[in-house]
Length: 165
Image (cartoon, rainbow, N blue to C red; front, side):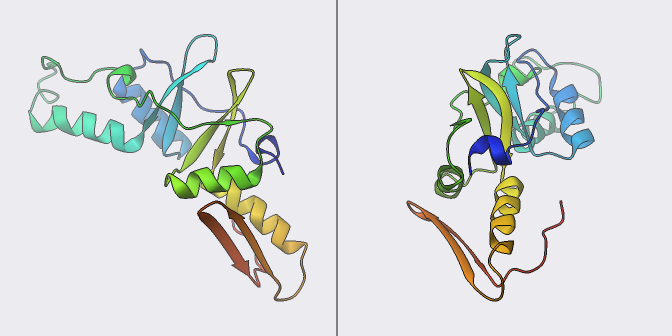
């Protein structure tokens, strides 16, 4: 299986100049934990997580500036102020094993998927688990399915139930 076989698409994204509040609204509305940050040409330029946005909003609230409608000097206002620029990603033809390895080794929750340098999808932990569950269903009974990639491993023993999506 390849990243394109398990990825979620289309991807909810934001641009660097998106306000922190609008990015937070997108996370809440779509019930996701992170957003790829893309250029107008859909090139990946960063990632912003709910933790990044929470800390940015909390910092403004704790100072009392948000309540008074005042933007503080140096207070984060846009996604580019809080996003991570060093992003772990996979190519569209990378394997499920590599996705599993990267997520496990780096404790990642999601991996943007790129084709020819452009964002085409995202692989989440749930996508990986769903794929491993589908593979496990191909093995009847209590047989174990073990996927190991480097230091990461996922072990499904006797999994007969589907993970809700």
